[in-house]
Structure formats: C-alpha cells, structure tokens
Length: 173
Image (tube, rainbow, N blue to C red):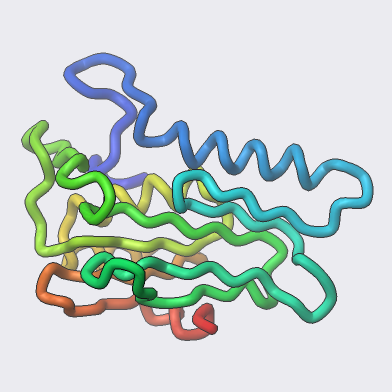
C-alpha cells in the first residue's frame, strides 16, 4: 500500500509502533461512537485525530494543524464539514526530532520535509501514509499522496515551502 515506504517490521522483527497509535485511536473512537445517544466523537491521540459524526447541528469539527516552523502557530485548520468520518495525522520532526526511519537504509529519513499532514477517513491508514510520505520527501511524497483516493495532504519543507494535494483547499476552514 505504501510501495515499501512504511513497514511494521524493523531489523526483521515485528515492530507495530508506527501503526498502533492510529489504530488504537480509531478503534477507541468507533467504540465511543457506538454508544447509544452519541452523535459525535473526537478522539485525539498525540495530535492525531479521529472524528466521527459531528458535535452538533451546523457545527462541523475543526482541527488545527501546528506550524512546525513557528511554535504556537497554525499552518492550517482542517474542517470536517460534510464528512461523517474524518481523520487528521501529522508526521514530522518538530516534536520528536529525526525519528522516522527510511526503510531503504534503516536509518533516520533525510528529506526536505519538516512535516506531512494527511487527511482521510481512517486514522489507521492516514497515520501510516503521513509517515511514508515524510520518508519519501516532498516531491515523491506529494505525487504518491495525490494517487491515493479520498486523501488530502499538506507538506511543509524546512525552507518553509508549502505543498498541498489538489483537493485540500476544500477541506480548509
């Protein structure tokens, strides 16, 4: 699914650390949404968010995307308007440094990116795709993300260049 850019193994052993957070947050959100009378669920796990339903009539969920180059600032605000299910995940170096592994080398990924935020329905996959796209770098990562159905993304380089998938503008607000 990621053309080898994301893996649940490291040094030949199972290593689910890159997928378990998104999976756990999505699973928790779905269990909460199944409770009778619940109309909307917003579960945030370390900045990655799964949204189901809405917080109320005419009030869509909105998720702020931190600006990795300006602490305390926002790079964008994603709106869940019109979506019953939406997730937002960011991978990058701003919070945890160079922790993303390039699967081709087994070492920290060296790219022009500082952050990749991916928007889609299921956090399990959106989280994986953000990590894979980060390891690819801005050009290859953006092209790959554009090829995925129903996925939008925001990529920010260390030079403060912002690249977006074609449909992201419709999700901002």
